[in-house]
Length: 395
Image 1 (cartoon, one colour):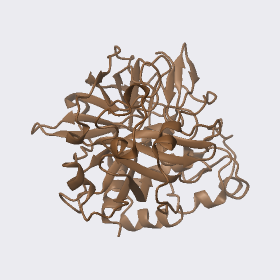
Image 2 (image 1 turned 180 degrees about the vertical axis):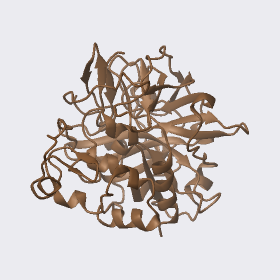
Image 3 (image 1 turned 60 degrees about the vertical axis):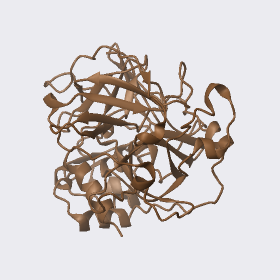
């Protein structure tokens, strides 16, 4: 399998060696991301990990080095326990990892959006698990094709954020809110599009722009006013949830944390039009949790930024039946499809027809190969469903 890249934190496999290139992220080299550390020695104590920020094992959870004590507050006794969390458990966890994103009027303009660039490569850390039947051979590359305009007829858009070192962007999708049918304000993206992972803090100035560049006004290097770039407005994130695995373990390279690299944002319109995001866009897609792998045919959608793309056009790869990629065989294997989309497509939705024929979101782009031959995204199961349920009920 060729090398694997990531957006704001990624990885690759080339002749058994893992490298990383961010697929979305701030335009400076630091980006707030970290590098996952080697596994701790078996005898390291939990108290050492918590107090000194070192490696350790807590209730079966192996922790990377450098984790601040504050990050461990509310941590489940084991990742298996996380699947049994209720709303109150998620609420307690969120209260110890606060997201603060005050609206700054007129902050995002065409120049700042255009200046958001992928971050520099990060060093290697992990190899995919190639035994135990959890990682398949890489699928054949699929060439991305443009999504027909107008983009206002589908639920995709771009996420922009500020982070240490600059500004970044990702792709994202409007998803249905189980607690507010027909009036969703929820957006699905990658975890690394909202938080750098281990030891970091949530990104600032986090917004979603549905139907970005709907008219093509900024295509081909042209400058366009904000009204053309954001025809449906800029929607600021009010609440955000990502997996505890990503918050505790995530970093600058693709590894086991990417098997839970997803996030959900609740957004509000700066202009307070009274309409929900779903009503404004004209629709939202359901999330298909625990989708049977042998029944899924996935299409990835996003705004790739590196050549031959420029981040202004929406593309899709009809990847067919996904193969499997895993860094930790105890966790659900990621979905992998052939696709030549580059950095910037991170966070973009993967769509598949359900048995009734309706399209649903089954994953989001997390990592891809260095040679841009395939993309991988997390398999969405219990933890992802709990996260959606929590933010849907969050007041």
